[in-house]
Image 1 (tube, rainbow, N blue to C red):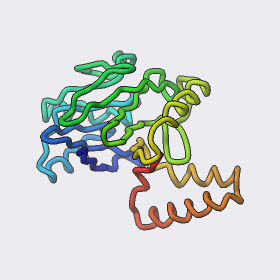
Image 2 (image 1 turned 60 degrees about the horizontal axis):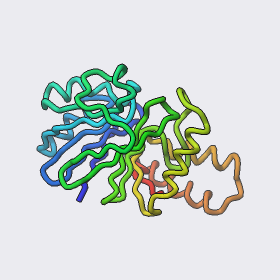
Image 3 (image 1 turned 90 degrees about the vertical axis):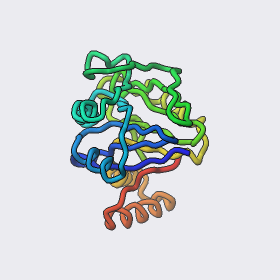
Length: 210
């Protein structure tokens, strides 16, 4: 089974520590210190750093974590020129063996031109980076709305119980925008009450379900 530990970093980012059997990895470490602190607290040594895309708030911790643990960096092949020290560049359809898991790489351009998501099909877990958020999607910095729409069509084929681990705590802001468009939606109103309670208790709204 896949074990996921959320690590809040920077202002509203999430990095993740992943465990499958004896394998340990870090995903999108936008800041090194909180991730290293949590790794030491858990007594874990990562061998892999996964990056979904090149933005600084997802990769700034790479260098210190790589040097401290001699971890390899697995990141989008199309963003190799923008992420330092990549050990393996991955692209659409690649499979990564991680402990007991077979991870499928999905190319999801839109937020950045080379953005990828990591799909743990066996555990029904998607690490979506800045492509898919609860009640929202990532900003289109380098891609098009059509590309993002095609990404969503692919996600729509995943099981409803798929757990989505995204790159930021944006749920409350996204929900407020949704309410501005559809203020009388009872399901949305109920969901936002739940989200506000979670955030008032300083807890993450992640993961969300597909």
